[in-house]
Image (cartoon, rainbow, N blue to C red):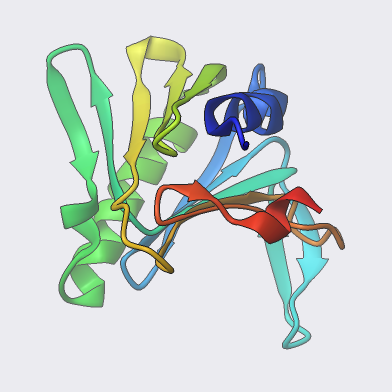
Length: 161
């Protein structure tokens, strides 16, 4: 039997002590880069700056501080201009205007994840629990290795090979 909480905690423990280095979006998917940025070549042959680790979130998420919700997945829904403004605002407040460092990560059996960061910030991810729908994935960009994927609130089996 898979211990989802333990797998999440173990796989994402590498984030502790790393800075949030970039925040962006692809349609309504939140993308977060952690660790120093480096250049890599995409499948299309273009250069892209990526962190040591990346988190792609396609389910419910919110960034919060004590008593305040800073952003949610709703900020990325709608026209691309709206999503671009939202990620620009997050990039400015979490990356460019201050250093935001990961303090800890905590998973749950439901595939949920909370990344606690400096300044009392938390990225809280709550899977939709819809079978065959990817909730979130964690991986090292540009590295030929399996991605750790939560799909339908559970660990996608190929993540374990």
